[in-house]
Amino acid sequence: MPYIDTNKVDEKTRKKLEEIIEKSYASYWKKKRLFDIFFASLILLFFLPLMFIIALVIVIDDHSAGPFYKQVRVGRHGEEFYMYKFRTMRANADKMIEELAKQNEMDGPVFKMKEDPRITRVGKFLRKVSLDELMQFFNVLKGDMTLVGPRPPLPREVQYYTDYQKLRLLVTPGITCTWQISKNRNDIPFEEWVEMDIEYIQTRTYANDLKIMLKTPIVMLTATGR
Image (cartoon, rainbow, N blue to C red):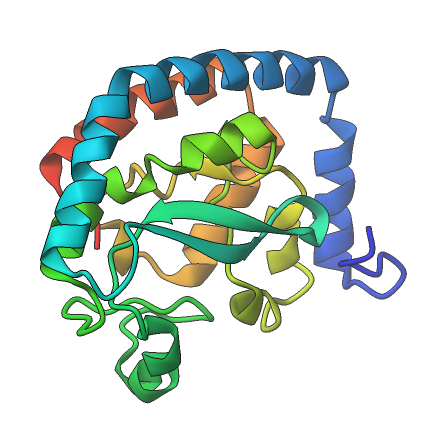
């Protein structure tokens, strides 16, 4: 694990790492991968017409860039990959992050704000109902992501992680997770978010994955994302 030096971690991190590894089993991941491919294929086939409409509306609303966006994220064991999304921000959004850093409404390394000026009109709606993340089912087919797992962080966020926080990178990141289906998720402190991810990793089961997947559409319909 090159992203964690197991010889230098503190006792809390070492103990939790041992507990997670002890409960890890290959059969779970093999079956999970097969289900990921099957379900992601169905979703993409079913939502293909809607995805075409979303892409068209994005271009009509803001033609400064294309409808799709890829961003470097950190995945399993610290490996970087391109995560796909529908574009919800203006073309120069990445360059504005330093200017807006002081207005961050999340604690820890994660950046979020309610009235982010970088987000387009269509993008604001797509984020609220999480439709901007439909493109990530292509990431699932590639194997970069899974259906259920900790959300993949940005490299600039990971550089501020403690060794304990890096434990959330032990598994393949997901489209949805315990944090994603939580009420007022954007108000949850980062430390609590990390604990939710680690608890999921330590207690992961097919039943829990299914429970999270079934709750995700309900959260989407309540439009609480941002």
